[in-house]
View (cartoon, helix red, strand yellow):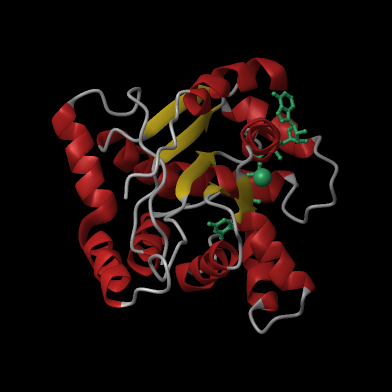
Length: 242
Ligand SMILES: Nc1ncnc2c1ncn2[C@@H]1O[C@H](COP(=O)(O)OP(=O)(O)OP(=O)(O)O)[C@@H](O)[C@H]1O
Ligand SMILES: Nc1ccn([C@@H]2O[C@H](COP(=O)(O)O)[C@@H](O)[C@H]2O)c(=O)n1
Ligand SMILES: [Mg+2]
């Protein structure tokens, strides 16, 4: 089990009670359980488990809004580990796993893969990584995704980025992407836009209500957009709280 390392930026929570609420939500029962484990299982010179609860950022936005592009910049500048839900699913297809053909047809149609599959891939990627700060890109796509993640991982994300971009611009970018993706065609993009509006926007609203959402204007050049993203991460502090 991990220990939490990052405090939240004052930009995210300005009032004491909101911060307390976030701390309670984030630590809840798990923190107590973790503390008990450390007390009950001491090892020479310290606690038995030195791993820390990772700092998790969900990165959301419509197809082609620039999630992956900006994640690469955040990784370069702030040292996060990038986990793209779409990439994890595409890797499952390439590795001929038992779910491969189901994932392939779901992606082709622009629909959403069952949460149990995606959450398991994310969980495995987090657990096998030494990193303590993750960007989870393209997840959660639905309320079902979000609830499944919170149940399995036992925590909410610390912050959520949302790249807000007009549909016209997103379609243009996707159709120019040229990376051989089976879903980069006009029919699938139309379906993905529909799925985004119907299923992803409610998730974005949920995090907005919780005060965790950073809405970023996703128009302009990659550099211009990154200059809007930079202050979000530059303001984060990482003291050890336990
Ligand atoms: N600001 C920008 N201006 C123009 N093109 C951009 C910009 N940002 C990204 N792109 C290009 O648009 C395409 C889509 O970007 P990207 O792959 O980052 O989007 P995404 O949100 O991850 O999309 P998807 O959800 O489909 O994976 C890429 O070819 C990328 O190079
Ligand atoms: N949580 C998710 C994420 C992705 N998918 C499927 O993969 C496609 C591509 O995702 P990108 O993030 O790379 O754009 C997406 O359209 C879905 O079909 C998913 O099911 N669940
Ligand atoms: Mg992407």
